[in-house]
Length: 309
Ligand SMILES: Nc1nc2c(ncn2[C@@H]2O[C@H](COP(=O)(O)OP(=O)(O)OP(=O)(O)O)[C@@H](O)[C@H]2O)c(=O)[nH]1
Ligand SMILES: [Mg+2]
Image (cartoon, rainbow, N blue to C red):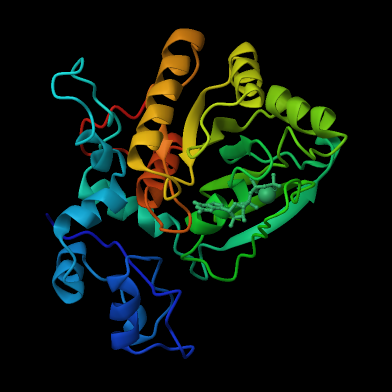
Protein backbone atom coordinates (compact mmCIF):
# COMPACT_ATOMS: atom_id res chain seq x y z
CA UNK A 1 0.00 0.00 0.00
CA UNK A 2 1.27 3.48 -0.82
CA UNK A 3 1.99 6.19 1.74
CA UNK A 4 -1.24 7.34 3.34
CA UNK A 5 -1.37 9.99 6.00
CA UNK A 6 -3.72 8.09 8.23
CA UNK A 7 -3.15 9.16 11.79
CA UNK A 8 -3.92 7.36 14.97
CA UNK A 9 -3.88 8.31 18.58
CA UNK A 10 -4.27 6.33 21.74
CA UNK A 11 -7.31 7.32 23.73
CA UNK A 12 -6.87 4.64 26.31
CA UNK A 13 -4.02 3.32 28.32
CA UNK A 14 -2.36 6.72 27.98
CA UNK A 15 -1.44 7.83 31.43
CA UNK A 16 -0.06 11.27 30.65
CA UNK A 17 -1.12 14.17 28.44
CA UNK A 18 1.80 13.31 26.15
CA UNK A 19 1.82 9.54 26.16
CA UNK A 20 5.05 7.85 25.32
CA UNK A 21 5.41 6.03 22.03
CA UNK A 22 5.08 2.85 24.09
CA UNK A 23 1.69 3.88 25.42
CA UNK A 24 0.53 4.72 21.95
CA UNK A 25 1.68 1.33 20.70
CA UNK A 26 0.01 -0.42 23.62
CA UNK A 27 -3.27 1.28 22.90
CA UNK A 28 -2.99 0.46 19.23
CA UNK A 29 -2.23 -3.12 19.97
CA UNK A 30 -5.72 -3.48 21.39
CA UNK A 31 -6.99 -1.96 18.20
CA UNK A 32 -8.55 1.24 19.40
CA UNK A 33 -7.16 3.62 16.85
CA UNK A 34 -8.11 7.25 17.00
CA UNK A 35 -6.16 10.20 15.76
CA UNK A 36 -2.83 11.79 16.52
CA UNK A 37 -3.17 15.45 17.27
CA UNK A 38 -1.10 18.60 17.21
CA UNK A 39 2.58 19.28 16.84
CA UNK A 40 4.31 17.09 19.47
CA UNK A 41 6.53 14.34 18.01
CA UNK A 42 4.23 11.54 19.14
CA UNK A 43 1.43 13.35 17.34
CA UNK A 44 3.14 13.29 13.96
CA UNK A 45 1.29 11.91 10.99
CA UNK A 46 2.21 8.28 10.48
CA UNK A 47 2.06 6.64 7.15
CA UNK A 48 -0.12 3.60 7.15
CA UNK A 49 2.78 1.47 5.99
CA UNK A 50 5.17 2.51 8.76
CA UNK A 51 2.39 2.25 11.29
CA UNK A 52 1.80 -1.36 10.35
CA UNK A 53 5.40 -2.16 11.07
CA UNK A 54 5.54 -0.17 14.30
CA UNK A 55 2.38 -1.64 15.74
CA UNK A 56 2.92 -5.11 14.29
CA UNK A 57 -0.71 -5.15 13.27
CA UNK A 58 -1.52 -7.11 10.16
CA UNK A 59 -2.15 -4.97 7.10
CA UNK A 60 -5.54 -6.64 6.77
CA UNK A 61 -6.73 -5.13 10.03
CA UNK A 62 -5.86 -1.65 8.81
CA UNK A 63 -7.67 -2.40 5.60
CA UNK A 64 -10.73 -3.30 7.66
CA UNK A 65 -10.53 -0.05 9.58
CA UNK A 66 -10.40 1.94 6.36
CA UNK A 67 -12.92 -0.18 4.46
CA UNK A 68 -15.10 -2.03 7.01
CA UNK A 69 -17.09 -3.66 4.21
CA UNK A 70 -14.03 -5.69 3.32
CA UNK A 71 -14.29 -7.49 6.68
CA UNK A 72 -17.77 -8.70 5.73
CA UNK A 73 -16.99 -9.94 2.27
CA UNK A 74 -15.48 -13.13 3.69
CA UNK A 75 -18.87 -13.90 5.28
CA UNK A 76 -20.71 -13.83 1.99
CA UNK A 77 -21.37 -17.16 0.35
CA UNK A 78 -19.09 -17.52 -2.64
CA UNK A 79 -20.86 -16.59 -5.85
CA UNK A 80 -23.90 -15.20 -4.02
CA UNK A 81 -24.95 -12.82 -6.75
CA UNK A 82 -21.49 -11.28 -7.13
CA UNK A 83 -22.42 -8.64 -4.58
CA UNK A 84 -20.20 -5.61 -4.50
CA UNK A 85 -20.27 -4.17 -1.00
CA UNK A 86 -17.84 -1.39 -1.82
CA UNK A 87 -18.81 1.06 -4.56
CA UNK A 88 -17.01 4.11 -3.28
CA UNK A 89 -13.36 3.19 -3.57
CA UNK A 90 -11.15 6.25 -3.34
CA UNK A 91 -7.42 5.88 -3.73
CA UNK A 92 -5.02 6.28 -0.80
CA UNK A 93 -4.17 9.67 -2.25
CA UNK A 94 -7.83 10.74 -2.25
CA UNK A 95 -8.21 9.66 1.38
CA UNK A 96 -5.06 11.50 2.39
CA UNK A 97 -6.20 14.71 0.64
CA UNK A 98 -9.59 14.51 2.34
CA UNK A 99 -7.93 14.04 5.75
CA UNK A 100 -6.22 17.41 5.39
CA UNK A 101 -9.59 19.14 5.32
CA UNK A 102 -10.29 17.81 8.80
CA UNK A 103 -7.07 19.17 10.28
CA UNK A 104 -7.52 22.68 11.68
CA UNK A 105 -4.99 25.47 11.17
CA UNK A 106 -5.03 29.25 11.73
CA UNK A 107 -6.26 29.66 8.15
CA UNK A 108 -8.64 26.73 8.27
CA UNK A 109 -10.66 26.85 11.46
CA UNK A 110 -12.88 23.98 12.43
CA UNK A 111 -15.38 25.03 15.02
CA UNK A 112 -18.86 24.87 16.47
CA UNK A 113 -20.71 27.74 14.84
CA UNK A 114 -24.28 28.09 16.17
CA UNK A 115 -27.41 26.21 17.18
CA UNK A 116 -30.96 26.62 15.98
CA UNK A 117 -34.33 25.32 17.13
CA UNK A 118 -36.22 26.68 14.14
CA UNK A 119 -35.31 27.29 10.55
CA UNK A 120 -35.63 31.06 11.07
CA UNK A 121 -32.66 30.81 13.44
CA UNK A 122 -30.48 28.92 10.98
CA UNK A 123 -28.24 31.52 9.36
CA UNK A 124 -28.12 31.24 5.60
CA UNK A 125 -24.69 30.03 4.50
CA UNK A 126 -23.31 29.80 1.00
CA UNK A 127 -20.84 26.98 1.55
CA UNK A 128 -22.05 23.40 1.00
CA UNK A 129 -23.65 21.69 3.96
CA UNK A 130 -24.13 18.09 5.04
CA UNK A 131 -26.40 16.95 7.86
CA UNK A 132 -26.74 13.85 10.01
CA UNK A 133 -30.17 12.53 10.91
CA UNK A 134 -31.33 9.33 12.60
CA UNK A 135 -33.20 7.87 15.54
CA UNK A 136 -32.37 9.12 19.04
CA UNK A 137 -29.26 7.38 20.35
CA UNK A 138 -28.20 5.98 16.96
CA UNK A 139 -24.81 7.66 17.29
CA UNK A 140 -25.07 10.92 15.28
CA UNK A 141 -23.12 13.11 17.70
CA UNK A 142 -20.56 10.35 18.31
CA UNK A 143 -19.96 10.03 14.58
CA UNK A 144 -19.48 13.78 14.22
CA UNK A 145 -17.09 13.74 17.15
CA UNK A 146 -15.11 10.96 15.46
CA UNK A 147 -15.05 12.88 12.16
CA UNK A 148 -13.66 15.87 14.07
CA UNK A 149 -11.13 13.91 16.11
CA UNK A 150 -8.30 15.78 14.37
CA UNK A 151 -9.78 19.00 15.78
CA UNK A 152 -9.80 18.27 19.52
CA UNK A 153 -11.07 21.73 20.46
CA UNK A 154 -14.39 21.08 18.80
CA UNK A 155 -16.81 19.97 21.45
CA UNK A 156 -19.55 17.57 20.38
CA UNK A 157 -21.63 16.25 23.23
CA UNK A 158 -22.78 12.66 23.28
CA UNK A 159 -24.88 10.83 25.83
CA UNK A 160 -26.18 7.39 26.73
CA UNK A 161 -29.60 8.95 27.21
CA UNK A 162 -31.71 9.14 24.04
CA UNK A 163 -32.94 12.61 23.06
CA UNK A 164 -29.76 14.34 24.19
CA UNK A 165 -29.29 16.66 21.22
CA UNK A 166 -32.18 19.13 21.32
CA UNK A 167 -31.11 21.64 18.70
CA UNK A 168 -29.63 21.67 15.22
CA UNK A 169 -25.94 22.24 15.88
CA UNK A 170 -23.89 23.74 13.08
CA UNK A 171 -20.12 23.24 12.73
CA UNK A 172 -17.96 24.98 10.17
CA UNK A 173 -14.97 23.38 8.49
CA UNK A 174 -13.05 26.44 7.31
CA UNK A 175 -14.62 27.76 4.14
CA UNK A 176 -14.97 24.23 2.84
CA UNK A 177 -18.34 23.12 4.23
CA UNK A 178 -20.73 23.09 7.19
CA UNK A 179 -21.80 19.99 9.06
CA UNK A 180 -25.04 19.79 11.06
CA UNK A 181 -25.79 17.50 14.01
CA UNK A 182 -29.55 17.00 14.31
CA UNK A 183 -31.79 15.98 17.19
CA UNK A 184 -32.93 12.38 16.85
CA UNK A 185 -36.39 11.18 15.88
CA UNK A 186 -38.41 8.45 17.54
CA UNK A 187 -38.11 7.92 21.28
CA UNK A 188 -37.71 11.17 23.23
CA UNK A 189 -37.47 13.32 20.15
CA UNK A 190 -37.87 17.05 20.84
CA UNK A 191 -41.48 18.21 20.47
CA UNK A 192 -40.67 20.68 17.73
CA UNK A 193 -38.70 18.05 15.77
CA UNK A 194 -41.01 18.24 12.76
CA UNK A 195 -40.94 22.05 12.57
CA UNK A 196 -37.22 22.01 13.06
CA UNK A 197 -35.80 19.15 11.06
CA UNK A 198 -38.37 18.62 8.32
CA UNK A 199 -38.46 22.28 7.42
CA UNK A 200 -34.65 22.33 7.45
CA UNK A 201 -34.52 19.37 5.05
CA UNK A 202 -37.11 20.89 2.76
CA UNK A 203 -35.78 24.41 2.58
CA UNK A 204 -32.03 24.45 3.23
CA UNK A 205 -30.57 25.55 -0.08
CA UNK A 206 -26.93 24.72 0.52
CA UNK A 207 -27.67 21.18 1.78
CA UNK A 208 -25.78 18.87 -0.58
CA UNK A 209 -26.08 15.52 1.22
CA UNK A 210 -28.06 14.05 4.11
CA UNK A 211 -26.53 11.18 6.05
CA UNK A 212 -29.27 8.99 7.51
CA UNK A 213 -27.92 6.85 10.34
CA UNK A 214 -29.28 3.40 11.12
CA UNK A 215 -28.06 1.37 14.09
CA UNK A 216 -26.06 -1.50 12.57
CA UNK A 217 -26.60 -3.62 15.67
CA UNK A 218 -30.43 -3.51 15.45
CA UNK A 219 -31.14 -2.96 11.75
CA UNK A 220 -33.87 -0.94 10.08
CA UNK A 221 -36.71 -0.01 12.44
CA UNK A 222 -40.11 1.46 11.60
CA UNK A 223 -38.90 5.00 12.37
CA UNK A 224 -35.99 4.47 9.98
CA UNK A 225 -38.35 3.39 7.19
CA UNK A 226 -40.42 6.53 7.73
CA UNK A 227 -37.27 8.70 7.57
CA UNK A 228 -36.05 6.94 4.43
CA UNK A 229 -39.43 7.52 2.80
CA UNK A 230 -39.36 11.16 3.89
CA UNK A 231 -35.93 11.77 2.34
CA UNK A 232 -37.08 10.18 -0.88
CA UNK A 233 -40.32 12.15 -0.91
CA UNK A 234 -38.39 15.40 -0.40
CA UNK A 235 -36.08 14.41 -3.27
CA UNK A 236 -33.00 14.72 -1.05
CA UNK A 237 -29.78 13.05 -2.14
CA UNK A 238 -29.05 10.91 0.91
CA UNK A 239 -26.76 8.18 2.13
CA UNK A 240 -27.44 5.49 4.73
CA UNK A 241 -24.75 5.00 7.37
CA UNK A 242 -24.80 1.90 9.56
CA UNK A 243 -23.46 2.83 12.99
CA UNK A 244 -22.10 0.85 15.98
CA UNK A 245 -20.68 -1.90 13.78
CA UNK A 246 -18.43 -2.94 16.66
CA UNK A 247 -21.52 -4.23 18.53
CA UNK A 248 -22.82 -7.70 17.79
CA UNK A 249 -21.51 -10.38 15.48
CA UNK A 250 -20.39 -10.03 11.86
CA UNK A 251 -23.28 -12.27 10.81
CA UNK A 252 -25.86 -9.99 12.41
CA UNK A 253 -24.21 -6.95 10.87
CA UNK A 254 -24.19 -8.56 7.46
CA UNK A 255 -27.90 -9.39 7.80
CA UNK A 256 -28.64 -5.75 8.63
CA UNK A 257 -26.45 -4.54 5.79
CA UNK A 258 -28.28 -6.74 3.29
CA UNK A 259 -31.61 -5.60 4.75
CA UNK A 260 -30.60 -1.94 4.26
CA UNK A 261 -29.38 -2.62 0.74
CA UNK A 262 -32.71 -4.18 -0.12
CA UNK A 263 -34.63 -1.19 1.25
CA UNK A 264 -32.39 1.19 -0.73
CA UNK A 265 -32.76 -0.79 -3.91
CA UNK A 266 -36.50 -1.41 -3.74
CA UNK A 267 -37.84 1.68 -2.02
CA UNK A 268 -35.67 4.64 -2.85
CA UNK A 269 -34.72 6.70 -5.82
CA UNK A 270 -32.53 9.35 -4.18
CA UNK A 271 -30.33 7.18 -1.98
CA UNK A 272 -26.68 6.43 -2.74
CA UNK A 273 -26.58 2.67 -3.42
CA UNK A 274 -23.82 1.87 -0.95
CA UNK A 275 -24.47 2.14 2.78
CA UNK A 276 -21.40 3.22 4.76
CA UNK A 277 -20.35 1.27 7.84
CA UNK A 278 -18.87 3.02 10.87
CA UNK A 279 -17.85 2.49 14.44
CA UNK A 280 -17.17 5.73 16.29
CA UNK A 281 -15.61 3.87 19.19
CA UNK A 282 -13.22 1.74 17.12
CA UNK A 283 -12.81 4.43 14.49
CA UNK A 284 -13.57 2.18 11.57
CA UNK A 285 -14.99 3.64 8.39
CA UNK A 286 -14.27 7.19 9.54
CA UNK A 287 -11.54 7.95 6.99
CA UNK A 288 -13.71 6.68 4.16
CA UNK A 289 -16.64 8.82 5.29
CA UNK A 290 -14.40 11.89 5.58
CA UNK A 291 -13.32 11.28 2.01
CA UNK A 292 -16.91 10.91 0.83
CA UNK A 293 -17.91 14.15 2.58
CA UNK A 294 -14.91 15.99 1.08
CA UNK A 295 -15.97 14.68 -2.31
CA UNK A 296 -19.71 15.45 -2.17
CA UNK A 297 -19.04 18.97 -0.88
CA UNK A 298 -16.86 19.56 -3.94
CA UNK A 299 -13.63 19.88 -2.00
CA UNK A 300 -11.74 17.05 -3.66
CA UNK A 301 -11.89 15.52 -7.09
CA UNK A 302 -11.27 11.80 -6.98
CA UNK A 303 -8.21 10.53 -8.75
CA UNK A 304 -9.69 7.10 -9.16
CA UNK A 305 -12.93 5.80 -10.61
CA UNK A 306 -14.53 5.69 -7.18
CA UNK A 307 -18.18 5.95 -8.22
CA UNK A 308 -18.63 8.90 -5.92
CA UNK A 309 -21.64 10.55 -7.51
N1 LIG B 1 -20.44 0.60 20.82
C1 LIG B 1 -20.68 1.78 20.24
N2 LIG B 1 -21.41 2.72 20.89
C2 LIG B 1 -21.64 3.89 20.26
C3 LIG B 1 -21.13 4.16 18.96
N3 LIG B 1 -21.54 5.40 18.61
C4 LIG B 1 -22.26 5.88 19.64
N4 LIG B 1 -22.33 4.98 20.64
C5 LIG B 1 -23.01 5.15 21.94
O1 LIG B 1 -24.39 5.38 21.69
C6 LIG B 1 -24.91 6.32 22.63
C7 LIG B 1 -25.59 7.46 21.92
O2 LIG B 1 -24.64 8.18 21.18
P1 LIG B 1 -24.92 9.66 20.63
O3 LIG B 1 -23.82 9.97 19.69
O4 LIG B 1 -25.15 10.63 21.73
O5 LIG B 1 -26.27 9.42 19.84
P2 LIG B 1 -27.19 10.50 19.10
O6 LIG B 1 -27.72 9.86 17.86
O7 LIG B 1 -26.46 11.78 18.91
O8 LIG B 1 -28.39 10.66 20.12
P3 LIG B 1 -29.44 11.88 20.31
O9 LIG B 1 -28.66 13.16 20.37
O10 LIG B 1 -30.11 11.56 21.59
O11 LIG B 1 -30.37 11.83 19.15
C8 LIG B 1 -23.71 6.76 23.49
O12 LIG B 1 -23.73 6.00 24.69
C9 LIG B 1 -22.52 6.41 22.64
O13 LIG B 1 -21.36 6.13 23.40
C10 LIG B 1 -20.35 3.16 18.31
O14 LIG B 1 -19.86 3.29 17.19
N5 LIG B 1 -20.15 1.98 18.99
MG1 LIG C 1 -26.85 13.70 19.56
